[in-house]
Length: 60
Image 1 (spheres, rainbow, N blue to C red):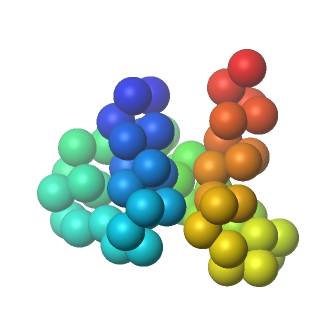
Image 2: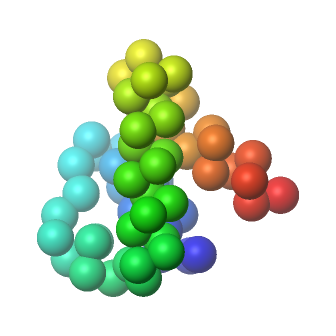
Image 3: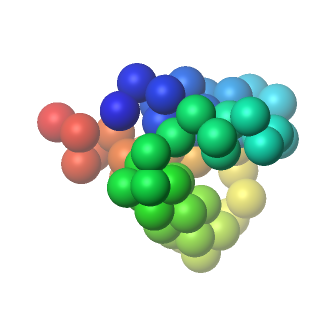
């Protein structure tokens, strides 16, 4: 889960992720990342500060 959180943080900070970030994730983490990006696109209005909100709420 740590590499997933790091990837989301990098995406929030820089607006990009590269293939090495995808390679470091497990398949279930890739699924969670794609769901997070879909959720963010629908409900976050593209605001970087809203990326990862759903992920953090499911972690606790």
